[in-house]
Image 1 (cartoon, rainbow, N blue to C red):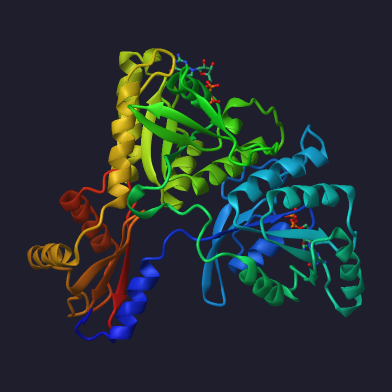
Image 2 (image 1 turned 90 degrees about the vertical axis):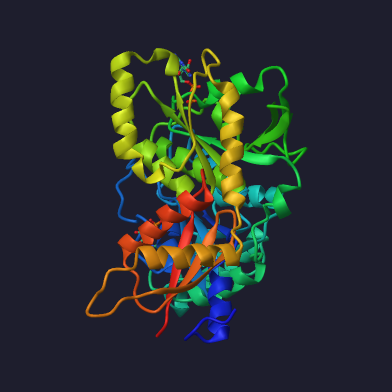
Amino acid sequence: AAVEGFDPEDVEGAIEAAGHGPLPVLAVVGRPNVGKSTLVNRMIGRREAVVEDKPGVTRDRVTYEAEWAGRRFKVVDTGGWEQDVLGIDASVAAQAEYAIEAADAVVFVVDAKVGATDTDEAVVRLLRKAGKPVVLCANKVDGPSGEADATYLWSLGLGEPHPVSALHGRGTGDMLDAVLEVLPDAPRQTFGAGGVGGPRRIALIGRPNVGKSSLLNKVAGEERVVVNEMAGTTRDPVDELIELGGVIWKFVDTAGIRKRVHLQQGADYYASLRTAAALEKAEVAVVLIDAADSISVQDQRIVTMAVEAGRAMVIAYNKWDTLDEERRYYLEREIETEFGQVAWAPRVNVSAATGRHMEKLVPAIETALAGWETRVPTGRLNAFLGELVASHPHPVRGGKQPRILFGTQAGTKPPRFVLFASGFIEAGYRRFIERRLREEFGFDGTPIHISVRVRE
Ligand code: GDP
Ligand code: GDP
């Protein structure tokens, strides 16, 4: 595409960068205190992962975007999860299972100073079973004298141990090169062209006790078919095929919903990891909110996770059977203030107990998926942008008026746009464009990404 004032190659590059599909996922697993969070911090080049967190503190953020040698991927950090009542082996194994399930490749971190422990061996067995590519990180090799410690880890049978000091950065570059060699370009879960290729995948998410398990039982009824994708293994995450509205849907990771896992410390974190794993596998998230209860920070975080994962989203307000006049009034106010940013998400008011409005769930999900897959032809987009810029020009700043010159939709699932401009476009104007795009083209139930390229 020729865009006035832009190098055609840059334009191509910008469109390609903006249109990238879902990113491959790398999980970082290992025992507590081996340095997983420190390593993740290195990878994302920020001090965002929470190494200094106190035990038991809720950590909802578990996936981060990282880039190495020009390639982008997601990192799932399983650090910060404390040992719980299940005992250390079981807890490390459970956390690793979720992370491995969601991942396309795994970095297994071992403390080279301590050497391989029984727990490490247990994780190795899980890794074998999962069959995902693994890079072995021999951490805490802070100097040349530690290299020998790393050599002992050949005994784990995972191939070459990469000596690393996550703390000082030593060896991390070489290790990341090895990671990129085994990490696929695209996630294992490809969405399939035009929505064909297997049942659509739904993640039913929400904080504990909102009614996920009840809802799943209600919609599943007698028709339930349980499928374990990896037949013959005892892995935890289970996807279920459920017929709704005459169509088969795949509810992902339902085992964690049905099974009551009683955890104390780290339970919230465990739930977040499960949510992140389910979102990775899903196309659409149904976020369940307990309408009887005030909308909480945790509810908001879960909604944010779904948006940041770039999934289509429906918000279902459950336990509608219990609401009185007064609660309904306050609920509407709360929705306005707390969920104003996601007013685009289709909403259903349901009761898993009575079955109220279950039939509205499917149309809402279908609407969200349609928005998620919408593609606006370039001609139509530019006719719309031209009108918008003429009727509502960007405010003049410093005697200049930045203009949108051209736009194109670089990708779908979710929709991604790249706009080319003659100057810096303010956040307020970007939001205005997003609002108008939604009014014009729909996009109900989907986040949309807009990136702006400015002519130098
Ligand atoms: P996690 O529980 O596996 O996420 O481990 P953390 O990243 O929280 O690290 C546990 C402790 O090991 C912290 O005190 C880190 O500073 C320390 N640590 C992490 N990586 C290294 C390293 O490469 N060398 C040394 N000497 N210490 C490290
Ligand atoms: P989960 O932790 O999100 O899976 O929540 P559950 O499905 O276990 O539900 C938590 C509690 O809320 C249980 O006691 C359910 O019986 C109750 N519950 C779930 N849905 C409804 C509903 O629509 N109405 C009422 N009154 N109670 C519900």
